[in-house]
Structure formats: structure tokens, C-alpha cells
Image 1 (cartoon, rainbow, N blue to C red):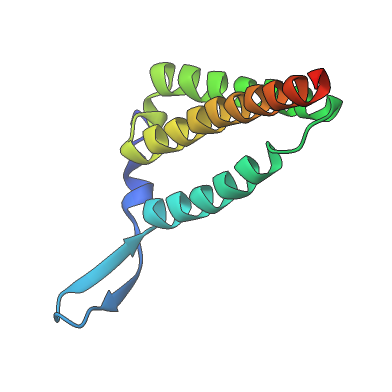
Image 2 (cartoon, rainbow, N blue to C red):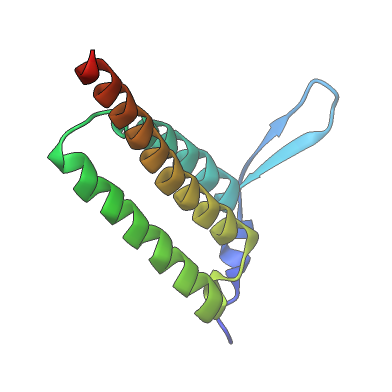
Length: 113
């Protein structure tokens, strides 16, 4: 078997476009849209400063590492949908640290005046 990722290609619904061409939305497409919305809120959350933000950054890193390990080792995770979810997880990690570093630099600058 090997755990084929064909389940993500399952069509959920079709939208008739003005051009007359049907646009088929798959389960993978829908999952990616949900993940992008979650990523938006996660990046908004990363703008907060405090001791809990460090824990959240570390958890984001753990999630990315788990995505990477599963993508490399699990046959069922070798799909474009899973890869894009892993990239979104990486963006969450990088954005979280970048926002924190930028905010910390601003705090140091303001404190020095």
C-alpha cells in the first residue's frame, strides 16, 4: 500500500467560473486555505512580547521539526499538500523569531534613550 496521499486529491465541490471552466476544490486545497488562515493568526500572535512568546516559538520549532521528519521518513507524507504545510510551518518559525528580534531591538533602543 504505502499510504498513498490520493486522499488529498478527493474533490469536495466544483465552482462554475464566469469563463465556463469548472474549478474543482480538493480536500488538499481546502486544508491549505485553512492552514493559511491559521498562519495569519499565528503571525499576529507572534507580535506579542513576553515570556510565553518564547515557549510559543519553541513549540513552533518543534512542530516544524516534526513536519520535516515525517516528510522525509513517512511515505504517506510525501505529497505537495504536506510539503506546503511544512513550508508554512517554517514561515511561522522564521516570522516569529524575526518579529521577536525586531521587537527586542526596538525595546533596547527605546530603553537606551
